[in-house]
Image (tube, rainbow, N blue to C red; front, side):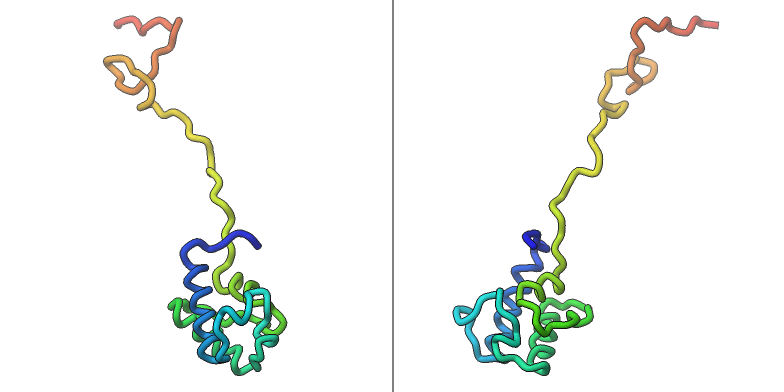
Length: 121
């Protein structure tokens, strides 16, 4: 996916690199995020330790990503910090009464052309 969870994704990526480097003794230039933890030599215990370390570094209270086996590092990052959609306006901005010039006795109320004023009673 191309969308990212803005401030969390870079921190999660850095935490993942630190965990892989510490636990698997692999510096980031030796692998890409398109690889799986299994391809990098991690067994199931290593995978749990890496993912736990990433969640702890981000101070996230979430369950470990399910089925880490066979998933790329990018896919694991997507599960840790779910991609967000680009922001779309929820509705167009409509003018309010405050945007219209009003009559002196009713500030903010628009004039009605062709409508006679109420006669005094």
